[in-house]
Image (cartoon, rainbow, N blue to C red; front, side, top):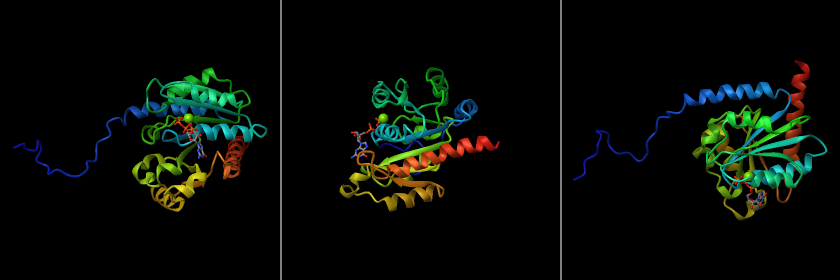
Length: 235
Ligand SMILES: Nc1nc2c(ncn2[C@@H]2O[C@H](COP(=O)(O)OP(=O)(O)OP(=O)(O)O)[C@@H](O)[C@H]2O)c(=O)[nH]1
Ligand SMILES: [Mg+2]
């Protein structure tokens, strides 16, 4: 009969050691350099699972804000330039970062990309991260704010299952709110769970497709841009 290879009784789950923590220190040095390089541009790192609606949100945000502020996007995907092309199609200054299969953007990729995009006069720089609720949470990209987008179609149980992403985000955007009547997703339940993970997290719902909640989102961005520039003016 097969005998267990350790003396420990088998259990239903195991808490693994994270052996990559030291490697992340290098990333943090580069993130600091990015902050020093972009002292007057608001940088927002947008994270989510694949397909939550990040690019659509960027496109609609660009359309709404083009006469109010100057926006640019760095977008990461394992392959293709599709998302950057979609954004350029609606007039957004966008550069694709092809990660070559990697499941997240690292700070050095942003640092390199900054040499290839014209940020003259830009007020707001979005980073659309690779679709993944796990790895991107560990990589500081020099952002001012991290925004997690969670689609109503993904289920409202995610904050407790992927806590680091919600713990490190300032804002949770529940996207595809137009589908809320058709799916078992409670904004109240997701807010409660997200705030148990991170009591300070803000929550808003929106639909890029129908426009609901987009004013609140755009007002939030304008306010943050003003605050960043205001802080600079005072210092
Ligand atoms: N019903 C509905 N569908 C949406 C909405 N926003 C985006 N979608 C759809 O969701 C799908 C994925 O949208 P994307 O914007 O490509 O999602 P993404 O997060 O950028 O995807 P990745 O970059 O691959 O991670 C597309 O078919 C969109 O048309 C929305 O507000 N409501
Ligand atoms: Mg996308």
